[in-house]
Length: 484
View 1 (cartoon, helix red, strand yellow):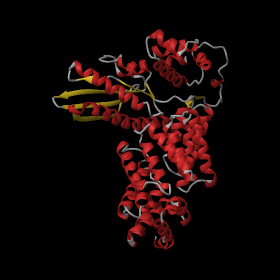
View 2 (cartoon, rainbow, N blue to C red):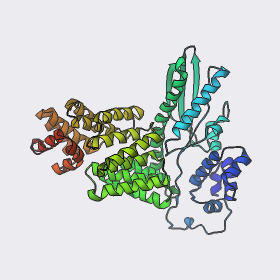
View 3 (spheres, rainbow, N blue to C red):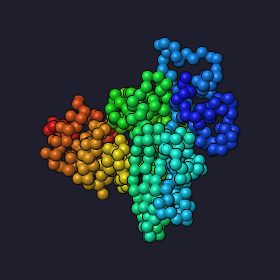
View 4 (tube, one colour):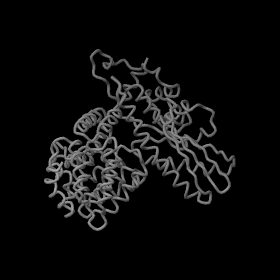
C-alpha cells in the first residue's frame, strides 16, 4: 500500500486532509502551525506521487475510482511541484547562560525570515521549530514531524568578549551532512552580528540546497516524478550552457508546466533560456527569443509576484529589448524582495553591462559580491565574465589585463560556455600581444568548432553598441582568426 511510505504524523495529517479538514483545523487539533501542516501535505504529495486531494484519498485507500496510473503501459505520473522544505532548529546554548536564549532565538528568527525570501524554498515557521529546543529526538524524526527535508542546527558559545557560532545543514531523511561553517565575532557587536550571521547563513545554504536538489532529481525515477524534479532537471541542463542543454531544459520546463500550471519557476526558467541563448549566440530564433522571454517572465510573476528569479530574468530580457527604464525598475524590485541572493546581484551586473548607460563599476561590485555569496555556484563563470566585460567596455577605468584574467579564470570553470573563451580573445586583442591573441583564438575554436565572426558580433552586440573600444576590437577579429 502506498500509504506505508508515510511516517505516522504524515499519515495522520494526510488522512485528516483527505477527509476534508483544512490546514488550520488540522493545526489546531494537533497543536502545530498551519505552515507545518502544509509542509507535511507537500511531503505526502511528493512521496505518494499525487497532485490533488482526490488522488490523495485514492492513494490512502479511500476512493473507488480506478487508478489508471497503475495500468500497464501507462505514462509515468507527474505530481505537482513540491518545493524543498527547510527548518531552522534552536541553536544549542553552549555558554549555558539563560540570558543568551533571547539572542539565540533572535538569530533563528532572523535567519528564518531571511531564508524565506528565497522563493524556491518552503521555510518552516520559527515557532514550530522552537518546540525542539533541547530535544533528544533524532534528526530524521524531527524532520518528519516538521515536514522538513533539510534541517539547520548549530551551537552558540560566548567566551568573554568573543562569540563563536557554528551552523550545520543536514539532509534529514538520510542524516547526511550537507554544509557547515563556523563564525566568530565580538560580543560588543552582537546585534549587528546577529543580522550579519542571519544573512551569511541564508546566503550560504540556499545554493547548497539547490545543488543537492539538482543531484536528487538527476538520479531520476521511472514513475511518480514531480513537477519540481522536472524543473530541477531542466535547470541543471540549462547550467550546461550548450545548445543541447538548453533544448533539454526547455522540454523539462514545458513538462513541469503541463504537470502543474500554477508552478511559476518553470516559466522563469524558459525566460532564462531565451535570454542566455541570445547572449551566447546559440538561439534558434534570435528575433523571437527576447519577446518570448519577456512573456515567460511575466507569466511567472503572475503566478508568484515575489519570485526574485523571475524579476531577474524579466529585467535582463527587457534590457535586451531596449526597455531600460522598466528593466532597472524591475531589478530594483528584485533587490527589495531578496538582496541576499547571488542570482539577483549577478542579474544586476548583467543588466548594467548590457545597458548603454549601465554602471560598469557597479557590474564589478555586484559580480564580486555574487562570488562571495556563492563561491561554488554553477553560474560563477558568468560572475567572472561580467567582470571581464565591464573592463572591456570601460574606456576610463577598464583594464585589459584584468579583463583577460577574469575571462581566463571563467573559461577554466567546469560549466563555462564558449563565451568565456570569446571574451578572452577580445581581452587579448585589447592587450595588443599577438602571441596571447593566437593562443586565445585557438582556445575559442576548440571550445566552439566552426565559430564565426558573426557569432562574436551577436554575442557582443550590446557591448559593441555601447563601447567604441569594443567595436574597434571586433574589427580586428578577421585578421586575428587567420592567426589562430
